Amino acid sequence: MKDIMRVKCLLSSDVETLINQQIKKEAHSSAIYLSMASWCNRNGYDGSADYFFAQAEEERLHQLKFFKYVLDMGGNAVSPEITQVKAEYNSFREVFEEALEQEISVTQSIKNIAARCHKEQDFVTLEFLNWFFKEQREEEYKARRAVELFDVIGEEGTGRWQIDKHVGQITYSEA
Amino acid sequence: MQNLTIQSSVDFVEVFSTKAGAIYQSDLENCWYVDFAGKLARFDYRNILKLKKAVYHIDIEDLLLNNTKSPDVEILFICACDHCYVLSLIEIIALKELLQGTFVMLELNHIIYDRLHRIIS
Image (tube, rainbow over all chains, first blue to last red; front, side):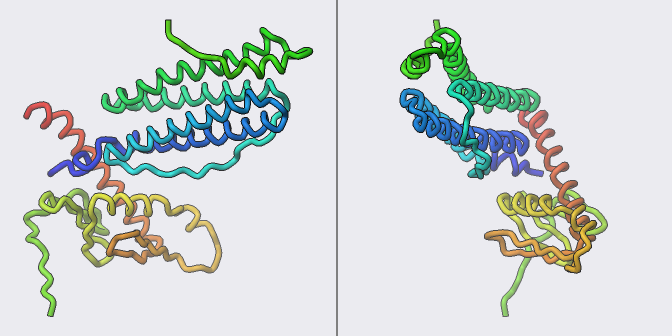
């Protein structure tokens, strides 16, 4: 008996489901960043708003990268429904703390896909995921550094203004 | 009069069967034939996955427990597919069992291919 499923699609249904969940997660991330950009802009933190606009765009690109991968491998990529996007934050610092939480949770869920791929010996998807792991290194670094600025600069006096000015300048370079 | 010829059953390989029905695979046509609820229906790769999704999505527990007066009948309509099923609750459970068994067998076949045939050949 021919293995028709494998001929049609490289991904197992479990991995396909996991990647579709990841697509949703990335889309949700993008929506959250957009919401954060809105909050920052409304409260006068224009530098941070620009930073979050850029982040939202980046998450969207990640989503599309996963989306295209599923389709290219013969699977079914599902355009996700996004709900429950938080719109209000209690403080400037809270926005960045949640951004870091968001990045950590994205890293965790990609690790989860990789663990499944290891189990199934799906080396093709594993190799594809490597790009994301590298990307997450940068994303987590940037988010962590932004929170760090609150401690280093301090929020007193013109502190928040300084933080807002410096957030956009955070860059990550290996070695 | 239209002549309906079904390819000889030699091409069919039974994937899984229960008392209620059976699913056969045709290697020649790259498709599956579902023998259930009194008809033999042809499903290609996309459609059998859609059928699986549709059946798995039915909340059987909810159908069993809700006490509304609506009849225990589900209409399974699959987009861009020639077939449609109108099934009672018992039939839904039977079809789900049939599909679950089928996908386990297909998975097993995949593992055998993956670990054996593709390595040896």
